Length: 350
Ligand SMILES: Nc1ncnc2c1ncn2[C@@H]1O[C@H](COP(=O)(O)OP(=O)(O)OP(=O)(O)O)[C@@H](O)[C@H]1O
Ligand SMILES: [Mg+2]
Image (cartoon, rainbow, N blue to C red; front, side, top):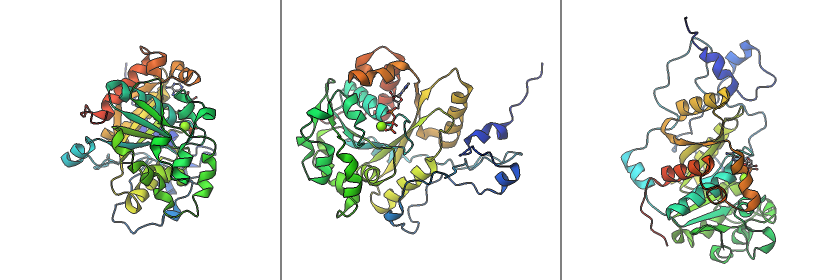
């Protein structure tokens, strides 16, 4: 029996955002796709003031999502292969890594908490910086907002040393710099501040050497808090949910990473993309994985975090999944991810 060749152009259409209302085919063809490639570093500097939350109707189309006949695959992937020097440089510790994606609920916090815990389990000394006024990383690590003496708000706005705010967690080697709701005001209070984009970077400089990995859990926006997180980081890890709107806003995020890189932090790199909430029973998840891997190549971690209710139950007990259910699929996935992220680099702190 002859098997039918899948229609790739049709398969890709679900990546066009927003899907509603679906444009007529004629409009689709005339639409200029928004390139996902980040602009070259030597592009004319763009004022950081131009960094604004992505307009709601920003449509991000995969550049090669052309109508049939399908064009040849682009010769250069969206991210170039790292050079040997870059790979070697990426192995050095300490590293500060932002977990960022302005899309809400894509598993930033869960990744910061559980990747942090899994890195700590390997023996690395890890600090999770909660940069989200929601404070989910703080509570997810078992710290009550009411009991904290100092928070990341004090670090950013009152020059309180990070050390004075760090709290230990139930996991050995894992620490958290908590967030409270005060942080919601910082987004506004930072506006007139001197060097407002570099507040966190300066604050973390004193503590950087005390930890092998500092993971910054960014809020779901591209505002000043996220810019502070990116400016303070060596790398960005972008979680992507294996869902319908997976790539919405990703182009905007990558452009903002490029802006921060060219204006504030030349060291900043997108270190990796992690696919989360993967449900192998759905064709959609399989398609999202295939598309993201095709487009971003080696930047996508091999480890895919499965959708599992056990991962979502951990936070209500204030425990990362490796403590809450050490042998679960989620725990195994985050352990694998920790190995990929650390690449076996020798520990140096602690
Ligand atoms: N692998 C998983 N399987 C099932 N549920 C998950 C998984 N990972 C995270 N969740 C749940 O998904 C929800 C969103 O996760 P999380 O809070 O980490 O996202 P976020 O990107 O930090 O959200 P926000 O943008 O609001 O900060 C949470 O309720 C979390 O418990
Ligand atoms: Mg979060």
